[in-house]
Length: 230
Image 1 (cartoon, rainbow, N blue to C red):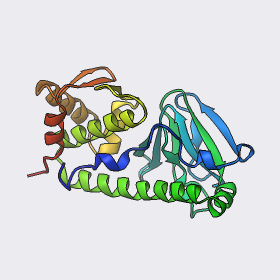
Image 2: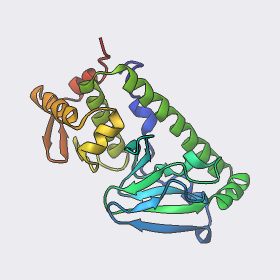
Image 3: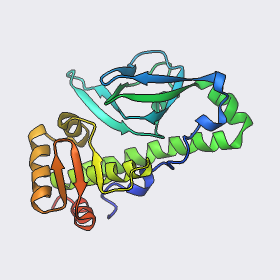
């Protein structure tokens, strides 16, 4: 992809381990299980901990000035939640489970102690913060420069590669988010998402059945994801 499209390699997390969790004492973290639609935390709640996704997936969202929900990120296994609020007294957004999901909650105080004592924990924390910055910048560039079909293609490639880093090695993956959530994240209308998916199917780049996606032509999909607005 060119510089205007999302950098897929920057979004991947090694599947063999969960960052941060390995360096924290068991008594200083807890495992949380969420049902679909359940909030992990809400905007305005006191910030006390960061979370590392173990299974499932979450969406991160906030509210626009007119009260509409805006999705800002999707988090999969190995991704960190709550790092966007580290310098704040309260969480700056909502985190909601998209499916039956689990995560490890690490108190921020314990994380700071472990980072000071264990170089590996500090490196994991730095990497999580760096990924947050890179991903935000990459998607900001993509949404500013890519046409609708290219945004959807870039999103599908990103999710495919991230699912692959989480242990799926086939060309098949499932979109756990709704079309409305995709539209919100990509800055498009719901019907535009449906049209763009239909265009990608017509070009034989992908096959779609409800939320299941098969990548048929990775090269063609990648080329489509690189086409900026003319």
